[in-house]
Image 1: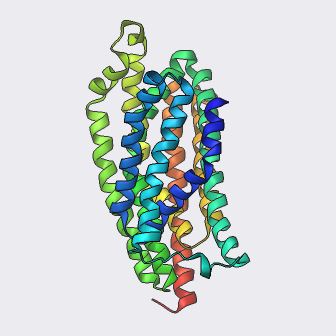
Image 2: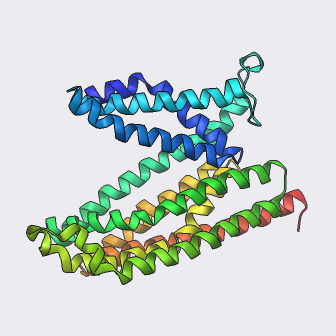
Image 3: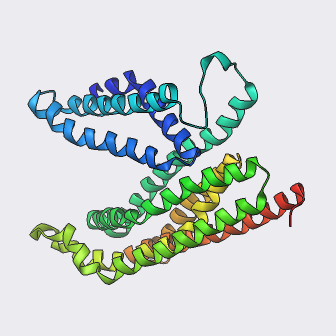
Length: 322
């Protein structure tokens, strides 16, 4: 409660930080957006022990460290946007007036994006339940450990997805559907190549990676199952770019509700549904959880990519491009 009160009190700073970062990325100035995030993260790392231990604030000290880091980062954002004014977007409050249409456009992308994050949390809850039912406490320990490593492969895809939203949004704004399609497909190809490397690395070095989680004697009991998980679960990363870039493209053209539908399909319906089917109905145990997540994600990715192909064709017809 104490931690939450501090961050809620500074909510306006957190929102401004995210909006400013989004403006920079949207303009293509990803470098400064990255510098701001590195600054905030670096300060947070340094200030955490100071507020928690040196000043004796305990857990709430972590909240103060986070908020102070964001305030400092926001000052840089404010300097770039309001004082230096070297961005394409020029923010002046004199020109501001309420617009229902603009608010609707923002909410059409923002609300589904927020719900998508909630959906992924809900999916993780159910996947944990399936892992417990299939393998007990050791099962959920294996799943949690394998999922953490696998999620490292999501990081480059998230970066590509942010870029895809910005670039396809700009292309859609100028009604250049050919550029939109080129950017979308290029992002998929690049992310696909990166993920092939990530998956190959995790599968090849599964015993070595598993040691990070099983070096203690008490954890050795999950080592064998963890190695099996590392050699199956990461495969779902291979087709993930097709689904995530499609969601990012839908956000770029202002159709956030389609992105939300894809996220629900991929996480709650396909991944959880397939994991339950293979693990419990087919009685494959933990191996069924990994197979279900992989097949569910791949199925959703194929559906999403097919949907995008149809939407691109309709956009070309609407704007008279071939």
